[in-house]
Image: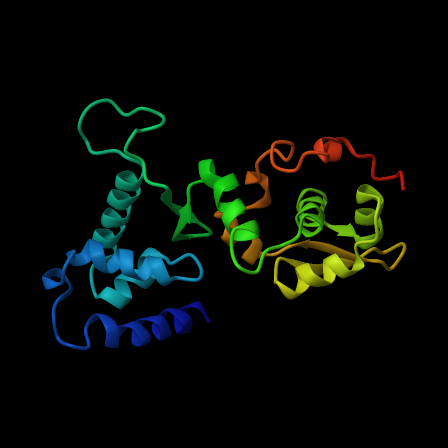
Length: 221
């Protein structure tokens, strides 16, 4: 199955990369530029082998360029000492996750990205929706009843909105009560530039009033 997917990706990209007969190295940016272009549109991590197949270049060379790009985005130029926070680091980074490579916004800017994605665009989420989303994100998998207990209000309509936005999903059912348990989606993580919920920032600075969420006793509601 994986081999078929990689072959399909290669065939799909050939028309874009090699369709006009111009070698990758003769294009603006060369091999580096071609790899960056693919990473910019990739919806999931891309492996060394997939990129090598699409670009028809040795896997070792493709991996070498990926490592160079990763270091470049992190601000390392090869000149001077390497600090933990290079001053020239970009607002995005290239991560090797799940066996492949993908570009993410840097986790240090998670709160800024969250403010834009969740509250800075035309279709804004209400404060109630933001708080409900925060509870689900930090307590998942969690039922509507438990979210309502934490927030002190009925959250049925808000949860429906979050489901429609693709930010939360029905994960499973509670084996004892049969209640549906909710959690965040990959869309939620991608829009925040996070690889997993473990990278979520502390909640207190962003949603005052929910500071004690982490210490909430799940048996009390």
